[in-house]
Amino acid sequence: MAPQHPSIQSFFQPSPAGPVPDVTNADENVDELTTTEVKALLYSTPHAWKPRLQYENCHIATLAPGPHCVCVMGRVVNLYDQPTSTSRLPYPTKRCLHVLLKDDTGMIKVKLWFLKVDYQLRLGQLVSIWTALISGPETSGSVSITVQNAACTIEIYPERDNRCYFMVHADKRDGTLLGERHGYSYFHDKQLPGLTTLKRYIDRGHDVPTAKVLVCVKSIGGRKKFATKKGSVLDVVNVIVFDESHDATLALYGRVATSAAYWKTSDTVLLLSNPGFRGERRPTLSITPNTCVEVDPCLADAEWLRAFAQRLTTREAVNVPFPEGGMKKTAPNALKLR
View 1: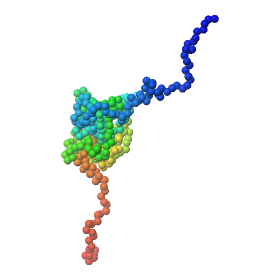
View 2 (view 1 turned 135 degrees about the vertical axis):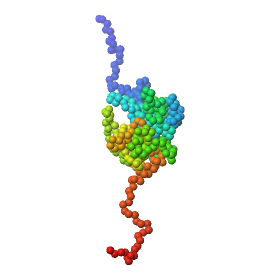
View 3 (view 1 turned 135 degrees about the horizontal axis):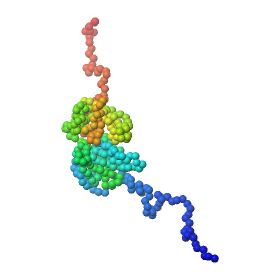
View 4 (view 1 turned 90 degrees about the vertical axis):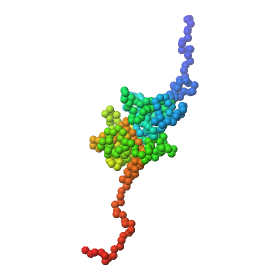
């Protein structure tokens, strides 16, 4: 009888029947990363950021291009989304938010990249930025395209780079923080250069790039949808503004449209520098990338305009006021009969 050789199955032990173990809930002895750990590495929480470097608190006017670990504080005077062509992709892509900051010394442009953390910013907010690199002005060929007097640019990506951070402060209504005033404060009794009335700006002042207009909010319209020529849909809010000479419509598109919900009629004062102008039927102002919008600036003219707007909301009495000395009594004989 020929000898029988063992089969290959006899050298292996049968595996126990049961459910397939979940690899995402594996114990700590496994070297592979779980799904939760992978998401924590890719999308870190910005609120858990702790500075690992020594940052120097600086004013915007003292910044210079180059590698510097600095912390800058300022107020948002303009913001808009960078147009992207990857919005139709099935997976999420990073987006960029352009923010213009201003303090008592100057302005700077910030390019804030984000993927999952959508920053809900509005005009007039007080923010702080930590960064390790400062870039020069953006150029297109030999022409600088940096807005107005912003000579430097900061580009940060807080979700991926732990050397930078973007924080929004809880601000008070009067524009102060810890008893100090931050952002666009001027000499209280000094005339602001380039400031003109709304009527002069509508007539011939809109061609001057350094012109400024101080207006007060009269009424705020509802939020509507606006379809652009490129097919994107933006929010639009029309705000009626006025001064002692004229009134006009301020159109807010996109990101800045949410700022109107925090304004008050006959109380909020706006200082507009180089706004867009369109005067076909009704004079309409708009916020362009080169516009600077300062909410409730510390100006004597702003306080006067706010008081002027509040006086217009009060009505004069219809009844004739009672004489202070009382009614004079007249003798009956002195009355003349008709």
